[in-house]
Length: 76
Image (cartoon, rainbow, N blue to C red; front, side, top):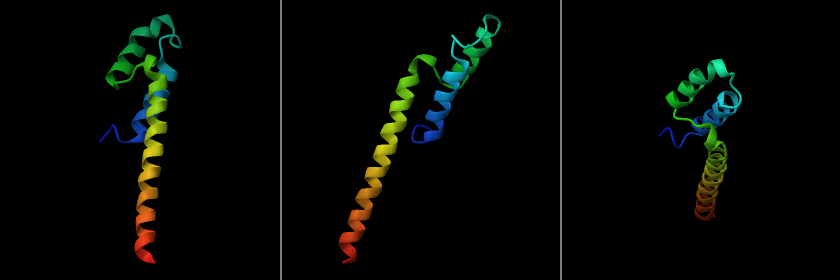
């Protein structure tokens, strides 16, 4: 279920942005790498997380539109 939740992908984007290898100081690189790996995140996959968020948004909107159209047809 975590892969259907937008919060996971948004959190992965935020963590990649905040704790990516080019944003941590050299003294904290090991801690930042551990934090990213412990949360199943990667700073190289930043754009994939954004695409998944946009895709999930579009898919859920299309499902809702289909449900509304189906209800409207049965209403009249």
